[in-house]
Length: 428
Image 1 (cartoon, rainbow, N blue to C red):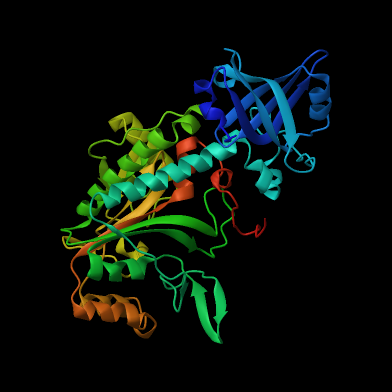
Image 2 (cartoon, rainbow, N blue to C red):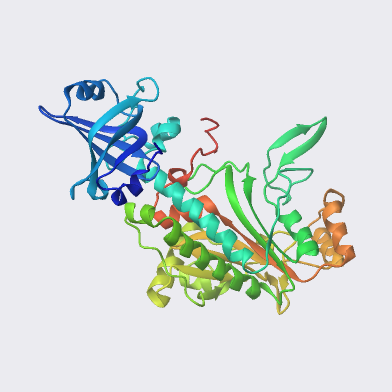
């Protein structure tokens, strides 16, 4: 008999079916027992009246994996409006050791460190699993949106010979006796692939060794990277980013609607044109000093509140960051060379995306490195490609975990990360 998932039982009323999953909860009453079985799609209530079956259920701790064969019977108070009656129950493994928290409760009461220490079972909780489903749907929307616009997915090295940005903290390793590093970003390689496909994207891990111990930073996270050629300036990149976000949220609604509902979320609308302010104006709005070189988290929050109050938008572009705070490959604003053709996108008052137009002339790279006192040699393999003709181009990168955390209202990015890696955590 083919296994049926809980989400499909409502169409099988009156038939005998086989389900399988984990013992989510047992309620042992005097004359009847209720067994709740959890699978990847939801919960199934099993009604047990036979004494022998009841005795078997009594011996099955929560999280034991079982198979149940029974009759699908309508019951408006049961999950999905049906339950299994007249069941037989067979364990598919030994009795489980219960985890140090109750997975059947609506919310996990364990502290976040405890959840992370026991992530393989904590992630089974519907709220933790829902966030991961939303992340998967967002990535599917990212890919689908860009595929429809003739972007090509690429896969770049995660072990590199030099850091993407000078002065940054990197994870060093031994590469057959030579120094190497875990890639902070696919930045150099995705730019080079613009010379091949014109429009490219990548979904992959990046590694940052900055010693941040905050609710918004991870040492390894998933980056959604995009690069496109033949742009006029950074505004073309911003337009693609806007459409990409809209596509991601559309797919979250379509693929992960159940997870969205389970978490009680209202997905944000992406405006047809996301409001944008120049960095200098952003400082004024946030009440920051005019000579501030960057936006602090408090400034970002103030700008998020302003965007919501003034434009009714959860999103806000801040353009024209000072060149001094941008990587050497950033294209300056031709009209104001001290400022960049770069941008950040704030989502509900938190920086979500960094992007902009890049340099595309070989001579400009040599000048930019010289101006920063940087030698060309460590970047030779990258910079040399610009001798062979590269179009004006630009791109952006979205931090997946940060996007999902902001979307679901998580206080800590680790709440939406399956197995986070940070300053303190290398297991599980």
